[in-house]
Length: 232
Image (tube, rainbow, N blue to C red):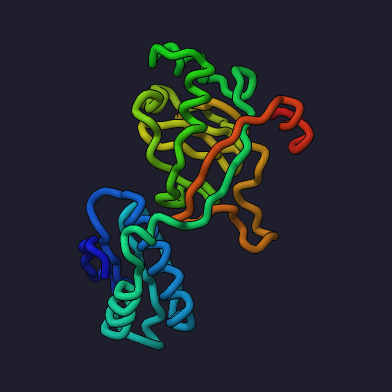
């Protein structure tokens, strides 16, 4: 096991939860990804679900086929197989294209004004960071990415929008994300990504997984339309 401390607690009659730490970071995100993969491969037949989050992993199992003693032992074995801190910083690197503009990102100018930056500076700062996928939730394919550079970190909108388009690239506090489908939302919208973030008819269904690394790359309006056809 690496230097990251962990604890295992009962989370229900057929569930255990593993806490990897109090605050998410790159090492914890990668350990969660590795533990998830190990458990799915080693005891997948008795699992009902594995639910990774920022700094924890919920393990739900079939109580008719196993018990928490067996699952706890499997979790400890999985944790002993996780990599060192240096190796944990690998993960898959995914580059997502973004059409940054006031047309595609209605909060881009206001965010720049609040932070005392130009729009070009906000775009440059957002692109220069390599983000870690800390969790996937809220909706299928909604990946919480951190951490956003403090210079462009921005609180959620006071009044959420009733409808945010699919592909909207957004910032809330020190997190960024791409909305996988139209939905309500209160994050600051700075652009649009033409890459589908969730497709139930493909395998895998999402381009990113917990523990992966993500970079954003600016594309032009014409390149976006070539990929997406229309602006939402």
